[in-house]
Image (cartoon, rainbow, N blue to C red; front, side):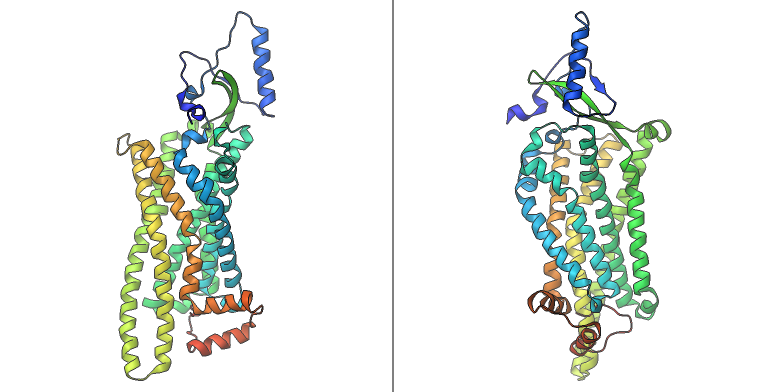
Length: 415
């Protein structure tokens, strides 16, 4: 597809014509160009080829298009439908009154964050790759800004929130299992809701400057001997003049590496190991109780073990997709900031593309985990969507208490 590649054009000396005013579309900039040409017979205006325009918003050149077309053009529409259905079902089930526990509230917030992480960039994926518009130059500047926000900034906000919510989930479960005496104090619904609110606020603050750190301007250039209008981006003046690009992006990506990627992943690995050890110890205790014919205590411990095992699986799936992204991001940032060659730029871009896609692919998996490992989730789902009714809060509470033994005083999730 050589005619569609903007990197195949070449030119020598040129002058770039950029219109930094408000754009009303292609026609206004074209009339502006024609007016300049007609006003000066001796002052000939030379436009650059597309490949020579720095920071041109060019979807084809920004990602490995041969992989992006398959993943985002052909697979993504089906993945989006599956994720919308699966996460909506999770939200509906976990929103029921008798399902309102501290653990379930975090799982509910994670489902919403994951859904929105995929939902915001989905229209652009469909427009660019499914409909084949990646070969077109994105214009006007309002479209370029929307593309930037919906593809990069907003998904990063919700994905950051999802990462920190997973850390809250694992930390809460660790307190339940390893420090049950303080669970009544720390693992309550009000405290969990406060923690979730703080997570979303901090995630937004972390991404808030990304909405304003880039300016978009229209530019005219030549492509296959035809005049085109597109967008070029530049760093905002408040970054360049008051902070400097080096300081700003070093702080942003440094924070992201430490507190969004490496830090949470390392903490989750440690918590998962501690939970697994506690699970093995609890299983030995359950076997001992079973031999002593203490069935009531044995059932309670079984329910707690099932919950712990389910959350270990959820965190493991999360880590399986997040650790590769964390490593790739560190290499990418180190290569740019330290100006050293670690890997080919196209290779790193392809790796990030694949890791992001696998993260999106993992979003519907949680629904299968809940259905497969949570009896309470399955029964509530059946009552809502298969039987057409659901028990009231009191009936549901009594039913699950009878099925699984007395509830613990910490209001943990009963499976």
